Length: 259
Length: 322
Image 1 (cartoon, rainbow over the protein chains, first blue to last red):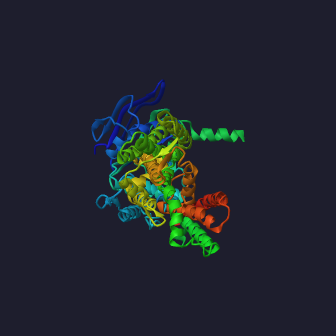
Image 2 (tube, one colour; image 1 turned 30 degrees about the vertical axis):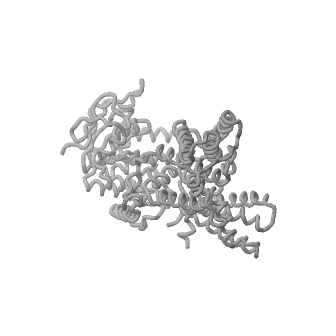
Image 3 (cartoon, helix red, strand yellow; image 1 turned 135 degrees about the vertical axis):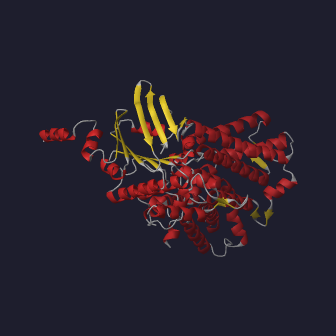
């Protein structure tokens, strides 16, 4: 199967800072690509290239086989690339239905009596969230602020998928969550994968990555340090890679000596 | 029950009802509850209410407008100089006054959106610039800062008609409130207003044209303030640069009493209307008790303090349970 999105030898320089160097990767439909890396490894820059904020300095971005330059994030979004950020794009003091359809409100009636179809918005929003296993929210009028962090992630991901996202970029969706909440979001990612969506899962939690990932890509100082498939490496090896190639056991021994 | 407690207008409605009952009991036989008495407090509320609705929507979107006061005065002076010193026809002058209000709003909006400075300070500056300019230009043209208005009969029908004690501005208030309600609660634009004030970055990420929302609301506020200037000018047959200065703080006060959060993102037009009605009842009720009207300020201050506390509580309530 041809990749949904592919980066070929992408460089991104900011002045003399080389944020990304020769990065190549592929996002396939119906697969979860885990993007691992320590802070400052270039993950944020890579997300921005994928989601259309930045164009690469060198190299090519291929979308469904064609070389593409995004005019901006909006352009990328219209072509089916949805980004869900860590702090989640939802507004606490607005209802579930209104949040779900923000910027794309369903309208009924004729001018001057055109109005938001609140009932439709609420029904669809609740329906979509139920599809992803979120049954606690029964009322679309409920304020988003009453929902937990995980539930809000589910809302944001469900929203992106409802509006036809082919590819989801999830920026640390599980890092601020408790165990139960994180597993809710991980389950949802599996459902999205079954629906043929390509997912880029950015995380620094190797356990979360190993539990859902199909492909893995480890970034170190702007370069792809390793790229492998599920079951090709053990958790220890992945952790070592993420720590910047330093042997974790060596690090632990170091710490013990200080004690 | 809990559902109603969490609505932004509940507090204002309860406060309005209690205050009304209080004054009705405290002033037996004085006519406070009569048709004329009711017209009295509605008159007082109406003109403030016309600016309070757009100011409220603006505050829900997270911005302030303190330039409304001088815009009221400027609009009345445009009408006065136009119909008196220049002898112009009434209706085109009314259109010009409304356009001037819209222009002031546009300047406010663009300045706030482009500079990203707090609108509180930007519009405070505009307030002084506009009143200074109105006085200066009026002096230059006619050597006055207030002047008579010669309105046509048709304009007097529309802007100064009275049924007994009741002023036509009450109808204008209802119209503005109805439009405000429709826009805020029933249109996509209303959804964008909430989102802009609730979380600007998220709103922008969802494709909401945040800047356009704000500029539009500033323009609407300017036009509404100009409408009040026209209403007052034609009712009193004169324009004055200082008309409307009381609204600068009265409008945000009744908006907050009406349940709008100072931080933006939460509130309703029904709440703003009850907040304004409450203002009318207090201002007029004090008069019927025969107490010194100086007490009005004290009442308003206490209510504002209570409202801010109550709003904070309502928000927490709204965010904790289903």
